[in-house]
Length: 217
Length: 257
Image 1 (cartoon, rainbow over the protein chains, first blue to last red):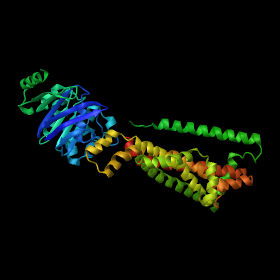
Image 2: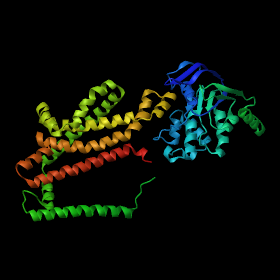
Image 3: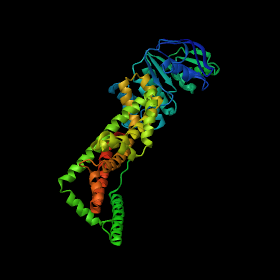
């Protein structure tokens, strides 16, 4: 479990995060929703250990793996090498195959489409054995046709981890989240905290629609 | 993307180049005939003939090899020291403040001043090496510094999150990022080193060197020798550059996909 205690972060006297207290549960995917620029990425950077200058406490993040909002691939490495740089070759090849990118294994990032690069970036973060998995808009720019298979990949690789994910698309959230946190744009306060009872893989269309309504309320 | 050229196009390109060269040689021949004073200008044929005479002399090979080794040694030392200085000055601001004025001075000072000073300080045999070193050092330093400062911060964060060791961060993030600028400094520096090195030899006159041969040709007014040795300098310059570019392309091959 990750515990954020009295977390505050300001940029030039402007508190982006103002005294935030929240727990993220183990073996659970929490989807963070808010207006853009509210402080999602800042919170994720603090949990990842990339932002040091903050007030309050972050407890229990353990080993963290991240899909950044930008792909951040190494231009000089092939698709496969971009995953192998954080994992063993077998895991990297398997993930590339699961992402449907085996044929692109030896291609360089500049030879791939935006959606392909996104999947490689996501695969890289899934390839690592971690306690915490941070996914900052992992499905950005992905084809709708691909989303179902990527959802199930994220679910498979999230087992036993504390997963925090952001998205702009509520459909992504109701498909894979166990819990939804909706933050206000001002001071990054929790406005809604909804836990979904039915596990993601058992949700049918009816339940997904019901959850959608719950978020939209 | 591939840069494949059809054999037909290739022959066309080569033909164009050869025609251009033929034009200038012809013009040279015309100038020779028009001037008709062998102290001022000699004919292309005379130069080639003289060159074939020269290559039979052991002195030719001794001069050439010593010039190449001196200048290349200075060049290589500059590449190594330039990289070390770049790392030091980009990572520790104290060293940047300390070395910046020196490197600016080296860049701004005329080569001739250095050659004459070096002649006084270190003796004639080592001057060309020193000059080649001084020419290349600021180029490598500034290019590699710019490369290090330009490394994508986002990728450094990737290295941090995925817990790369320092060695892995250097090898997998810094080196590939800086490599293109480093290699371009190596190619640019080579031309500078070679020309400045030969100039240094002309002024310092080591016992055996291409520059010394040029100097002798000048004082004995052997225009034929002057032209022949100049041709040697040009040919070697092209040859060495082709070799370095070839080595670089092998080294950097994986990037040009």
